[in-house]
Image (cartoon, rainbow, N blue to C red):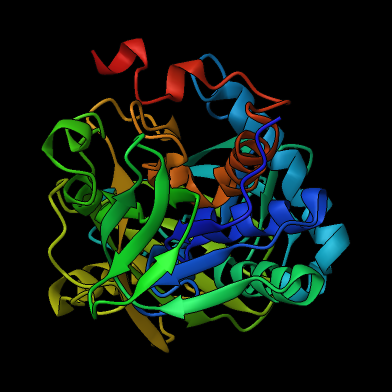
Length: 371
């Protein structure tokens, strides 16, 4: 059995907090999270929190996603569904006729099964019901997991930036160095920095760093509109830029779309530029798809980067050649969904030497998909 006692997790997002949560809940082991800003300052605080159980079936992340969907339900029971805004709902695809020019409700009867997307809609298809679709508020979930980790086992947060992984002569992790020169003792380091994971290549030196897959970020903008009533149907539109809308139980409608191309991220966590022209496109798309939401101005505008790899698969596993070093990142648009199962698996790696519930060989640093 491998039992690390001084675990450092670089990154305070959904993955880092999930690792901390499962170390505390399943193994009664504390850790130290190090983040330049704090808990969930970037995508994990700004994402939509849409959860789909079976949308990755047939892919290498099928079992990860299915287990994580179920773990979200367990977390809601443990942490309190109301506290993290967890609920089941349904999802529908709606096709819009852009030739109408916008602003037109469908003539005659409203499309059957469509709750609120009533403008220029010409067709729809159910994508999932309450048995396979759910949602959670990512920021509230991260805060709740971190609160539990602190109270249960005394996990700690250090606001700072890791710049170097320190190793013993035998190549095992013995600490990390921060940007201000502080040395934090550690016998295990998990790199869970989302789109900023690429910077970790320099922490280990060129030879080891080359083994960490390239990590980029896809920038998404989003707006939040206060709905006149609580809606219960997420909608994926085809038309007007294909926006996605996730109504929340607190009354907000989370609207996103128009992603940028993948790029190496140079903006700092929590300081991502919000471009007005993209916000305007989201507002315009809402006006053309919903009479209920379209005339309400957004109360929040934000942007974040979703971490992705060239293969489109997350990286979860040990760093070859460095005992005690791990990477857990690159989950793309499914980061919030797959956070719990990733955290559970990494916690098991740290404590028991290998994950007990999942086979993550295809997601490791030496996966055949990365050759």
